[in-house]
Image (tube, rainbow, N blue to C red; front, side, top):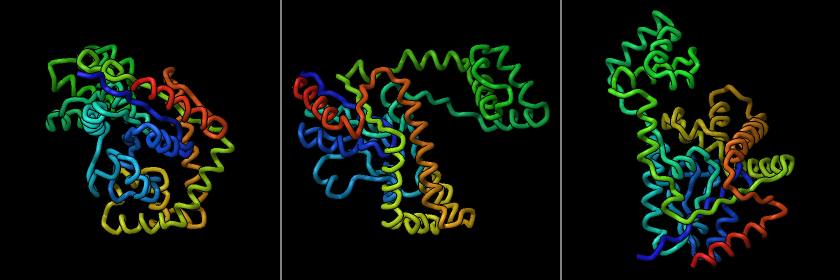
Length: 312
């Protein structure tokens, strides 16, 4: 049995040219593209997600783009399961380019997704009642008694996390720390299965702001507000993708919370904040080889071509 082809991660903040680089590399190497953007997975979320065009979808095989039906929930855990299936099938014959800025999705795929076991509703109700009557600090002390390592990672006033930790303690025969350790032992890191390459694209913040403004102007011209209006009319205001950058600002306009003339600047501000968070996330990964997306895009393209040519 032949070795699998490489998995290439093309990462970085929004609007840095990841998709464009992926298309050029895919065309040059016969690779396919696996989407790792948490908004592009939804079928009726189109304009604000900066999805690949119909022409691009025909030109290069894309996976996990627009496959989640309208109104449905989708988790990072589901993404991991589906992405692993794609990798298993596709890397038998060609490289796969994993493209996106959703760090949580990338981490789930690469290192696994820790998900807490289901909770007994009766246990949850009892804990909620105790929090109301005694406060979260008293219940945090209970966590500290049985699972000090988990307690050290939870602020006593963080009601949600105190509740979840206690749900595990009272509903399972194991502590949260024990469950996490089992997860680490059972989960295989992606790089233990596939040859892996990671590149990141970044750009000067002022240049990024210009790119973001241009992109948002285009999205609004293409009818982003109308797209959101049609989804809100179907009662989907609280649907996860409508809480994402660009969409939540449009919802605010439609609900009278934001003047329409302020919409472009509001989306720019939110997008730049998102880009900063994305960059902070990806900077922690020492395996990423970084390229400036304006000055070094050809260098990044050539780097990947050489790596993928050597892997043949």
